[in-house]
Image (cartoon, rainbow, N blue to C red):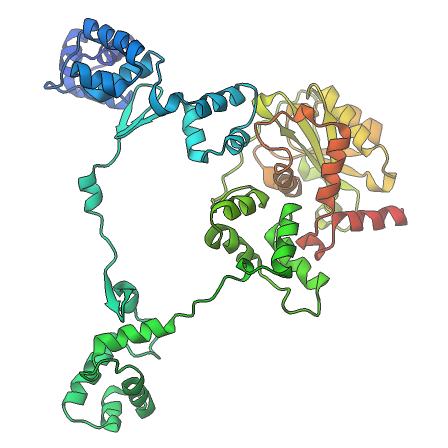
Length: 519
């Protein structure tokens, strides 16, 4: 039997009835749909299913609650006074735009004021000293209470109960000489070279059987020195050799606790801290140390050690200070996200990347550039970025008011105007509408413009990487129009002064200066 078809008007009428607190079956009967379809609509709309035993409140009771809330100012107190369900009262207050308790404090109000003035969430949270997850909740309009969270659409999500949390398995531990030892780590077999717990139990059995050390070694397939050393070092009880105590003693002896390298004050830590303050990456710092201190083995640190100093060993203010100095400003590692796809918006014919000369791909001949825009908050401001493929030298174009095709064209022409013709050969751009004046730009600079395929940012990967570096100076969500031409020149100069792995740890400024001298 074919499924019955229902109209969109029936679905909307049904959802409206459920949203007003009606039961699923009553609403389905009123609209004229079968119950299975009705429950499927409820699930698709993200609505909670009212229970038949759920308490119903009249409009008069709701009005009495809101009136009393205006006098008392505390949802929980009013709900307790009137004998109403507290979660229901929070939903009423939220839908009425009334927020009480900890969320009405001055800090949250100041945060919302800063956001309304165009300040980014990260900057506002940093200014007020609140955690990023709290700032994100405030931005999304999410309200919290002791048992859960209330979302802007009225959904109430309760936290896991204490009973559920109590059922979470805890690691098994034991005590050895007054210290707690993780049994999971104790029983783990590391390598066949080391005696396992089962072998130690067998050793105990063979010893009780009266066998000599050499006989035990033959029976276990081990060297006699291994058995002798095991009995001498790991007999830690006056009752003789005990396999489990011996195994825990062996595991405890394997620990090699030592102080983190960058937790010790000294010239190495000072150097790393100073370079992080200049927004160098950990890998740049690690590689440059070998050049700046070639004969001092004490001035060596791997990039992973620097990351560990931030993510693992640092605590409190030190952790926040070091995390702010990293490229992304995060206090914890986070996987990369795929960049958003771009679409073409051109009317005039464009030159595809497939027609670009092969010499550009080789990065041998200088003068081939990649470009893009960095967009500010609310899509209202932007900065043009240019990076030379061979030297990674970066130029920034000023866009004080708008980012139309004409404004971007003039900005790029001004940024490249002082370069010799040998360093102005081609420009690779994505298919953004801001490059609609590519023909006029090519005529003014004598540079051929090539365009990437749609949704293919990797085809101008050098520029994408540079834009990521520039976001440390020009953060997302901020107003980029406040930066003057001199401000952008200073940012580009600092970025060009960083050593690069692709340049064998030379700086882009050094390579570009050599090209200018030879031009």
